[in-house]
Length: 473
Image (cartoon, rainbow, N blue to C red; front, side):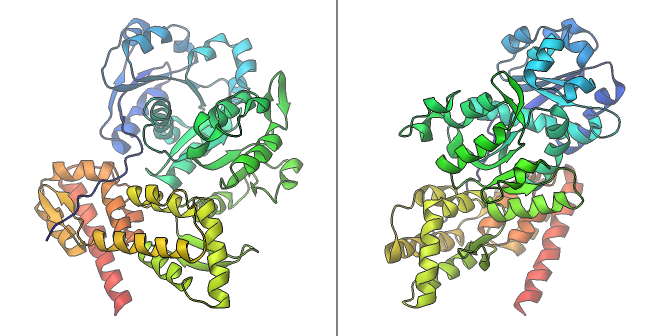
């Protein structure tokens, strides 16, 4: 029997290997312990003088974490010259910087212009231990988006000018999206237009070329404030115009307005309003992201927004689409809904997020309609489902085709071969493709090493084997 090879989608081919700390704050320096725990593949260095930071050299991707004091003493230009793949981060304890737009901060504190990313930290809301892994991940995302974007990416775009907000928000967002998408932070209207459309002014958007001029085609969710700088205006409702612009050119992109401003309420027809800081807002955000960006179940809604079908995995999606093959009133209505989903890339986005990279490519875009579209979807999904039965995950040269085989391999394999599969989300991606989404979610990802990691993963798989067996009984 001929088997197929399994190729997981790796969103960040360039992984951060080194984090260099140069800070007078002990809690910042000690936050490296959290990185070593949550990101065990990263080496952390705490340096004590500016010359050793400036002269640090590595051929591997590196993040330099500096505070307000140390930032003034290092040469960020030389850091970048010495380290091809490097990101310089200012972890600021200055409350004015926390609340300021880039131009205001630059005018008062010129050293802010030396940083590639700026985050806020203090001892209450933005504690170094709690934010440091998201800071490093954001740096890794930035590096990959700017220099390693050969394959189609999936990006959550955050637009907010104040570091205090996204410093607090990013740990929440990364907890939701895991390893399945990147995050890009922009802080002005012009920077956002440049990222989305490759231009700095709306009038320069080329209606025929905008899809290939910027990164807008890679964005799967926009999370924006209402007020942030545009031109010389430091505080204007640029978010309103951005949402209207995205709705015009990229109507498929779900938009979240993170704001309590009255202007946000006026945009309810075009975006989901998430009041900053309200009780329960995090769970509301999680549900919205899972339901609208392809991360969770595939939802089929009628024109009024009511849920009529929900698919947890590709086999259930296949069953739903088969119902649209019939010649009934209900099937005709379902076909029209699915036609709209095809135009908005809903199928391909969901498939990409659940590990079906090549299938997502084949179904993007859907230029066909009616029964022809349904036939193509059924044919392609059936082919993928059948091929996954012959697609093993390989653990220490052991071919694994099912859950019981996975348990056996986890027990036999050298633990050193298990760790990279867990760190890179390979287990979860394969399980998603095999129609085990709940198990995939629980394993997405688990970091650790040695036999302890093997035992932990094995225990989780054994637990779900029992759950799935009880469901089928």
